[in-house]
Length: 386
Image (cartoon, rainbow, N blue to C red; front, side):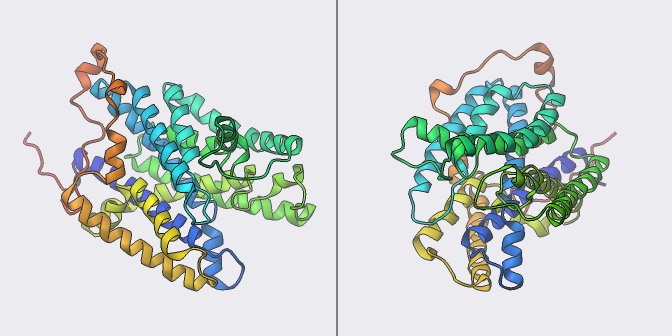
C-alpha cells in the first residue's frame, strides 16, 4: 500500500497526465483539418471543444492548489495570480500574432487568473453554484449580446485598443469569459475536494459520464424533435446545440462532464502505472511551454495545414513525440519548464509577504500536497517506524 506522501504524488501525477492529454487533444484539433471524412475526422470532431474545456478545468484545480501553497508559504495569493495573469495575457497576444490560424486561449486564461485573484476566497458551496449558474446564464447573455451588437467572433490582437481586447476576452472572442468561467469555477471547486479519496474518484467518473453523455444525448433528442438550429442567425434555438465551441449550455455541460470523467479515471489508474507514465508526466509538468511550442511549430512548419484528417493525425503525433522528448530531457535536468519558471518568478513589487495566522503557522509543515518528484523517481516510500 502506498504511503500518504506517495498517494499525494500519484494524485499530482494524475493531474500532470490530464494536462498532457488536454495539450495533445488541442494539438490534434489545431492541426486539423476539421471535416466529416472518415474515422480520423471523427477523432478531431470529438476532441473539438472538449480538450480545451479539460485544460480550463485543470487550470481551476491548479488555482486551488496554488492558493493553498501561497497561504502556507506566507505569500499573498492575489499577487501571485495577478502576475501569472499579466504574463499569460502578454504571451497570448504575442502568440495570436503568429501565422498559425489558431484562436489562442491564453488571453481568456489570463482573465480567469485575474478573476481568481479576487474570488479565490469564495466559499466552496458558492463555487459550485456559481459554476452551475454560469453554465446556464452565460450562454443566454452571449446570445443577447450577439443579437444586440452583431459582433464578429475574432480573438484579441496586438495593436487592439484596451477596450477591444477586453471586449474580445469577455464576450466577443472565441473563448468568451462569460461562458468559459463555468468550467473554471468547476475546476476551482474540484481542487478543494479530497481528490485522493477513491470514493470521490469513482464519483467523478460516474457523474462525469452521466453529465457528458447525457447532455450530448439530450441535444440529439431535442434536435430530432425541434430540428437543427439555424446557423445563419443567432437566436435561442441554438440553446439545444452541443457542438464544440457553440458556447451553449448543453455543450458546456457535456464537455465539462467528460473532463471530470477523464480526471476521475486518471486519478484511479495512474497510481498503478508508476514509472510507465513518466513521459506524459513530464509534458504535464510544463503545459504552458508545450502549448506555446506547438503553436510556434504550426506557424513555422505546418500552416495552412494538411488537407486530410489522417495526415493531420500523423503530423499531430509527430508534434506530440517531439514535445515528449523535449519535456523528458528538460525535466530530467531542471525542475520547471522555461515558461513555468517564469510564471513562478514574480517581480519584486508583487512578492508581498504577510504574517501567517497562528492556525496556519502550526500546519505549514504538514503538506497536504507533497512536493512533486521528477519523473523516473519512485512513488513508493519506506514505511515510517511505529
